Amino acid sequence: MKNPHAPTELPGPRARALLDRDRPVSSPSYPRDYPFVMSHGRGAEVWDVDGNRFLDFAAGIAVCATGHAHPEVVGAVKEAADRFLHISADYWHEGQVRLSERLAALAPMGEPAMVFLAQSGTESVEGALKLARFVTGRPRFLGFLGGFHGRTMGSLSFTSSKYTQQKGFFPTMPGVTHVPYPNPYRPLFAGEDQGNAVLDYIDHVLFAGAVPPSEVAAVLVEPILGEGGYIVPPDGFLRGLRELCDRHGILLIFDEVQSGVGRTGRMFASQHWDVAPDVMTLAKGLGSGLPIGAVVAKRRLMEKWTHGAHGNTYGGNPLCCAAALATLDLVEREYAANAAAVGTYFMERLRELQARHEIIGEVRGRGLMIGVELVTDRASRAPAREVAEAVLHRAFHNGLILLSCGASTVRFMPPLMITRADVDEALSILEPSLVEAMEATVSAGRRTTERGGPA
Image (cartoon, rainbow, N blue to C red; front, side, top):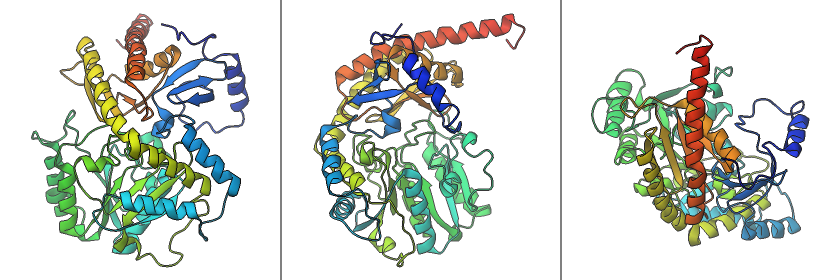
């Protein structure tokens, strides 16, 4: 199947020319999957520099929450730009105060909250870690296998979704112990409730023999695992984690960088289980494309920070604050509800696809944070890594922008404003792309065998 909106082969001549210019001057470390060179976008549609049109179900890694170039967001940014472009966080401005007020009011802590504005997810996580150490005086942390929290040295010490992110950078921040994230589809512990099993492991194995709980400042966890596979934890896990932390005087930090701001059909993913964190990190969809992050914490914790204990230059940038305020307006007014409704429809359609293709082992998610796990066979649940990678490339050539995560999961994180018609179009591209990927993988296997390679 060829992208019906593609007048040229992909990548086209203009895209190839730009890729040639980029190669000698840009870092090779960027994790780029296929040669998409963007020209412009509107809503859930994007066009490359050769005029090819694509449906974007990656949204800049869940960043473009309100779609590309939403007029309300663009208008707010332009209005802010007319006034001033920057004043450091050493001073004040209306947008920064308004955004902090808004986030504090929305925060799911169940008590007054305070806000520290940053520029990205990893910086927000760094701020949360510093706050936890500062207010508890404790040196250790717990993280979860499969988690992604950023690439700077503190957040990187928790990131464990791929060893590529850690390879070559050891040692990172000391004092971090990882435990398994509860995965009902690929359980690591005995018993049907993987959430309880993980909690039992922490409390009665880890805390009993390896990590003194009195030295643990915080547990950092994604309410829904993102880069590690879009895994929804069992009901009761986050509440049990809350109770465990309370019992040992440990802070609970929810990383909502990817799952927050309406992505799962609620403002924050933790609200699906009505569990309150002590600290929460935000970024990605908060600014609809502009670089902004936030540490949101219970006021009684954050007010313990002393003058100059933490700061930054660009946090609270007026353009980013304007974009975030417009984004929150849209998400509260309509897009969180749309994510819930269209996400339900999308999951139903994906399960219909699952019924037609044995390679789809599981469809999971909340709202518009959806993962499709590809397996070599449903009995063993062995990851079909090559096919998952091939799906991304085939979908790109057919007009659909996607990313993967976990062992072999194709993830869907489109703008929150998509319609059922967008879902139908995406699936009309996804299914033939999946078939092409399976056929290509089988053909590649045959060629390897014919050349005398592994069968």
